[in-house]
Each structure stands twice: as structure tokens, then as C-alpha cells.
Image 1 (spheres, rainbow, N blue to C red):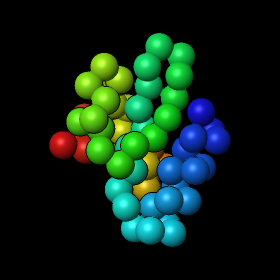
Image 2: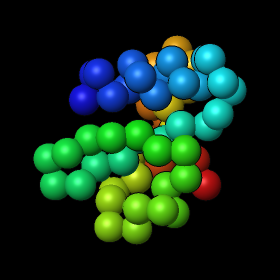
Image 3: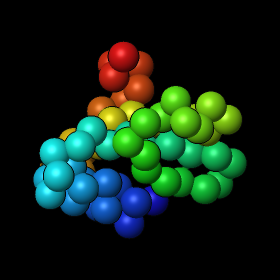
Image 4: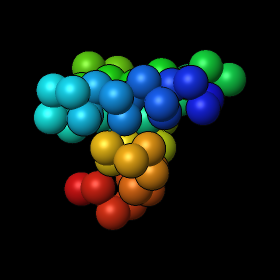
Amino acid sequence: MADVIREAARMRRQYGWKTYLIKFKDYYSYTFDPSLFPDFELLGEVDSDGAVIPSATVR
């Protein structure tokens, strides 16, 4: 999961895109649009420092 957060933070810093941490069973990934993955659990938004803002405060 740390690798996914690190890569999401890099994308945020490099391109300025909002990135979101998602989970499906034991698989973690990031996305730019969580609505494309309705079966995945939205864990939160990843900021440019790699901190995850919980999904309850994202919306």
C-alpha cells in the first residue's frame, strides 16, 4: 500500500491531479476518478505529501 500512496502523491505533485486511494479486497490502487470503480472502497484522497485524507471528509 505504501508504494501506491507514494505513486499517487508523485502524480499529485507532478501534474496537480487529485488522486484517490481505493481498495478492493486486498488490492490497493489509486485513481483520478473514483466513480469509475464503484465496486472499490474509497479510502480517501492522497495529498502531495502522501497523507491520506479519509473519504468521510473528501466529499
